Length: 341
Image 1 (tube, rainbow, N blue to C red):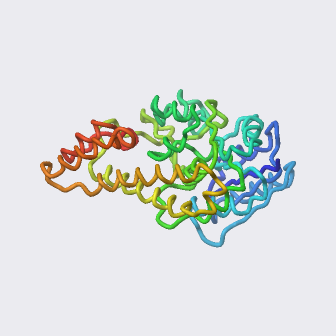
Image 2 (spheres, rainbow, N blue to C red; image 1 turned 135 degrees about the vertical axis):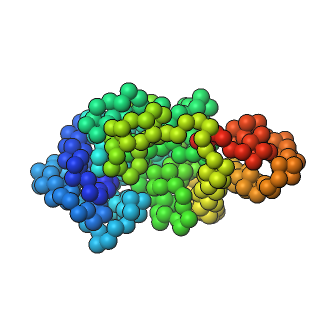
Image 3 (tube, rainbow, N blue to C red; image 1 turned 180 degrees about the horizontal axis):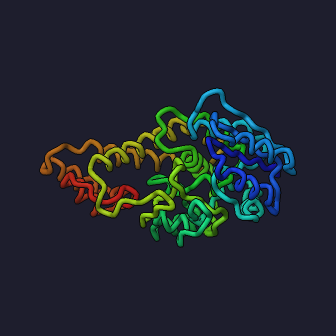
């Protein structure tokens, strides 16, 4: 199988050489590296070109005329890949030497659309922070069970668990992934995970295949439970999310699932991917649940009947945090993190 790596850069001169070296040092080399630069103003592109001259595989570099932002930059890089399998890469991480070797055999099975893994969280100087990515994301026992039983779509409906820097997917799903829909709330990796899990099998490997660098300059990072000045990221303590924050997250969830339904609700797609009809039915059921929660009236005494009816359907248990979420909806108070709802 031919493999491509889609790497996006933007003012990453501090760490990009280390990342490129880790890709060049893979035990199984990729066939090509696609580097999309989002109009860096530092020496990022010069470093990429220097490494490319001696790389043992083809390196294609695109420098955009204007800044696209990370999501559209990745979409363009993915579009350029010619491999059967596409690996996603961030500019500031370090791949472990056997990353491609460990992921690629799973994608040799045509029923598998996506593979993703855990990651080791490190600081700006690659010193371990004492935790893994999945631990920082606080995967619940139920989420672990869904991943282990091959039912990732059910977990990904609630929130994204797939970090693109750990993932690889089959390029024959690209026509469903691209173009990225307008109104999408999730970034590229969350959308890719939704599409792949709705149409194919997804494999979650409980092993770190990258050192996921946490530093103040990065656009996104892991939600660390403990504040770390080196990582420059912290997770607000449980009980701190406001009602408006929960409402915003519910709206994003609903919008993303509506994008998914719009993209996949086609008889030809259902004929190609037998899992699509059941995935769409599940997504539409979740949309119905989020619509109800978003439309609850203001006064608590008017909320109670609607919430009780929804509890009886079982959807609070399936798609939210059960009675806990229902009680919060009744009162209009949302005191738990959305990721735990």
